[in-house]
Length: 199
Length: 351
Image 1 (cartoon, rainbow over the protein chains, first blue to last red):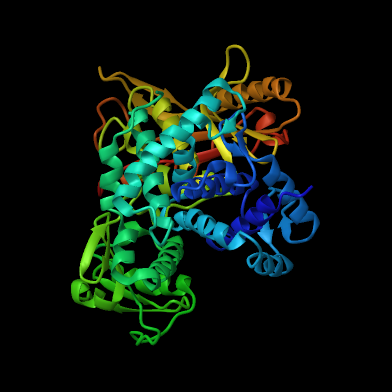
Image 2 (tube, helix red, strand yellow):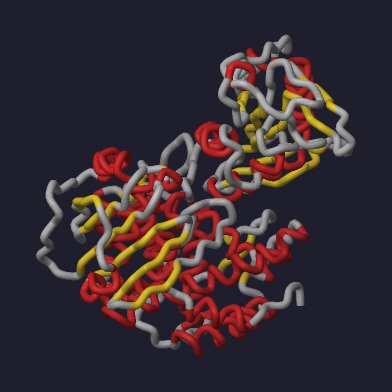
């Protein structure tokens, strides 16, 4: 059965990133969906309420089987167009209409806040920095070091995120109107960990 | 714990955040204007070399719906970038953006504190970027080393395009991504001793930050004993690129002994890469692998250990002279991309 949350997220993330990055790689959909999920945690939502789970691939990148299936469904339905050569995705005109319709359903309006907060960070930070920042989390580090797959966030990874978000929310507020702000600050912070470790 | 994190660092980053300053100043309309301005600046830098900015670049995005543009209105930032290029070499330039993507420009600066009372302003000078909102300003945090503006960092979907950009923007003038460290002296006549590690690291950093949907690894092992300089593995598709980095030219040890490499070095690299491709095909038979030989060319004519200055004729003698390969792989094998020679220019003295 189709996962409605991942179906919406895949289409919405592609629509936002398509405007910023000019087509989207499936791996980028996973990264920004994972960041959206973390922003829901920033708003004190339980991670278990996100609607689908994330894991890692051996190289230490976020992955979601539900999102992968949704991307496949959206391509099959003609809402996303996938370039045969490089696998990058574009939202089609019928996909834009489908998204407009979906935005008014159920909890999708609420999800939109997390998704836009995550995707807008790509306006402020280079994609490579965002990818590296996400990679610096404890879970993705461990997956890469052990060349293993695992569910994320793990309980220890979640503890890191809660600790970091607690400090962040004391500075910018849990209820801040625009989630692009905690997204950018957190990514800059994670990216700075990366730099310190390289030294 | 795998790493310690500094709670003060998060707080400092939050306090320095320009988006939070804009939200406090202008609420949601300010954030919408800021996002539109970021998009326009990114597009502008796609057509404009930020390093050409001799004085300052100012971009103003008023929050008013009705905007009085400076004069000619552009709906194409490529054309605007072309028109301001000359002025930017000698004077300040101010660009006005409207939310619909239109823009205009004038030579000269504006009072940014006053003008930001109902506008968001971006200011670039000497690799420092500021955002002004309602009379206040903060510096944009640039998490990237070696690039003048993070808005100017390109992103690539094709490896060939990324390597071409590395050749033109980094290697040619030895600028950025620590490539300047490959030289023994300021005039870029001799490479430093064993420069290959610095060259590899520079290319690795460039690919890591600009290339989409793939992850690079340094000195990746293709069999039990052979590491290729960089292995790039695509995330969404089963593709692998093996990149071998070689150099030709003259390098100097700290003791002043010179080692010279010429065409034979390129040929040895081609043979080495061919072996890697064969071994890699056995390791990951389900992946589509392709080899890329990158040769950094620092050849100069008529130099010895004592050369400290070079004429244009000698320094640029090899700029257009390709290396000769006798390996059929470099020209005929379909999993072997045409070798890419990247000429690094010296600082030449007037004759």
